[in-house]
Amino acid sequence: MPPLIAATVLAAGIVGLFVLDRDETLRASKALWIPLTWLLIVGSRPVSAWLQLGQPIDASDFYMGEGSPLDRNVFTALLLAGIAVLIARRRVVGTILRSNAPVVLFFSYCLFSVLWSDYPDIALKRWIKAIGDFVMALVVVTDPDVTSALKRLFSRAGFLLLPTSILLIRYFGELGRGYDPDGLPMNTGVTTNKNTLGVITFVLSLGALWQIVMLLRTKGQPNRGRRLLAQSALLVIGVTLLMMAQSATSQACFALGAALIVVTNFSAMKRRPAAVHVLVVTIVLVVAFAMLSGDVAGIAHAMGRQSNLTGRTDIWAAVLPVVPSTVVGAGFESFWLGPRVQSVWRQLSQFMHVNEAHNGYIEVYLNLGLVGVCLIALLLISGYRHAVEAFRSDPAIGGLMLAYLVSAVSYSITEAGFRLLNPIWIFLLLATTLVPETPVPESPPFGISQQDEVEWALHDEGASFFSLGF
Image 1 (cartoon, one colour):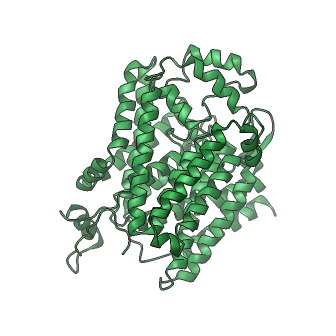
Image 2: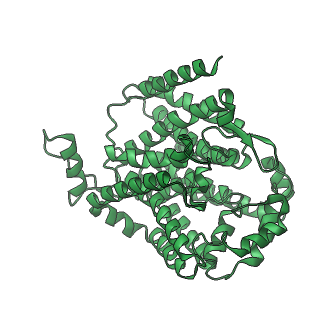
């Protein structure tokens, strides 16, 4: 099929998916377009790369350089728009921040660590970009109907990014395919790196699976059949794309997250919420035992990697001895700057110009020291506590939060998952900041406009900022 005809068919197919998934009962606010646009950029390429105004770079690596003025202005505009929304929702935001002290403490420490960075000006600019991820997560979780907001975020991003990736790989190879540092061919789709393609695919595919499970549970929903068809098509596209991306970590994390979403919706699990602890602890213990037992070769074989985890153990051995401070690290996003990087590159001649440790925990240690690792641990514990609380009220929401939390923990074993402008980090923040709240907002007066109704939900003293959809 000629590329232009394929592109036309794809465009028609994407429109068809949006039509099939149309649901007039979803009442997410228009502010959702702000985090959606942020996610579309982070999950693909910077705007300048799409417009071919500069050298294309991986969106997840955007912060490593200054970027083009266009990209900087786009991110700044989205950040300011997100902050404006949060100011309008300040009462709700205040409640969420008080319930997420570990997240606030982590970002505060990141800002404080700029003081001992060798390049404080660069570190400060990167911290501002990092705050953007948190702002976007808050815009989603403070939506008057957060369940509707999550559904629309997953669907809109998935319908646009995943089918387009397959089109670029199959029909526009100059855009959708490339070569890794070893000169081997790789499929990149809308991104410029197979790992970035893998992670954005698996997080959006988990969202599609979650919606399918919810639709199967509630048979009385309007237009259930066509919505189920749209989400099933998206899940099939996502699984196909995961195979094409050949990112073993993303494939394993999708399988893990999918299992959690499905298992936590079993009737037996719903009747016994304590079983969630057993399930999660078992998963963590199995992964930890396998890693600590030294059977790296066995783990690598199971994940389709070499016995040295495709060079990752070499990187870990090279970077750990040169961290400037074991307690506080090099400063926020400052380790991969300056002369120390040259010494690392000299040791890793086969991985020249590597700019991450390919392990989220080690990456945090390099930049923020043991203090940063402890704060990440607190953040994860807080997120787990919120997920369990949500599971008691709504197993579907709780299962989704657990899926993103556990998959992020696992993903960060072989990739730098706790890093700004990374899709898995954004979804981890979403899962962590989703805080269940007991009272449901009082119904607004009859006859007011939709915009006024949103304001009523946001400013009513007794309003709940987390609607579980019942």
